[in-house]
Image 1: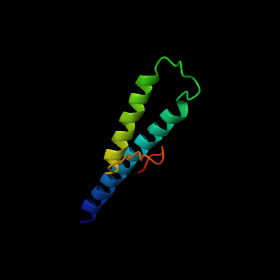
Image 2 (image 1 turned 60 degrees about the vertical axis):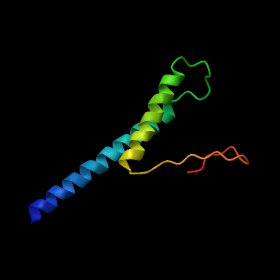
Image 3 (image 1 turned 90 degrees about the vertical axis):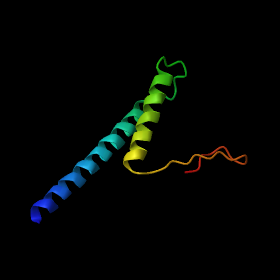
Image 4 (image 1 turned 180 degrees about the vertical axis):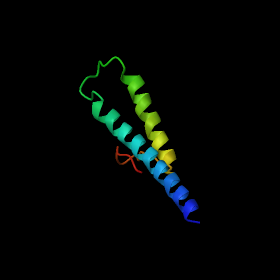
Length: 78
């Protein structure tokens, strides 16, 4: 049975590695995003990529994002 435990551990580690890669990628995309340049040519394309990576990460983490904008405030609620 030790072999099946080793295989299970390898699968869990690979899954965690995939999550970490997605998280690192999302962080990198956000850090490289030109917040101070409203004339940036690829603004919409990059935002779509960030949104897609966020959705991928939520799926990998089995998290359902819930964005609510209330009339009282302009913040997001998670």
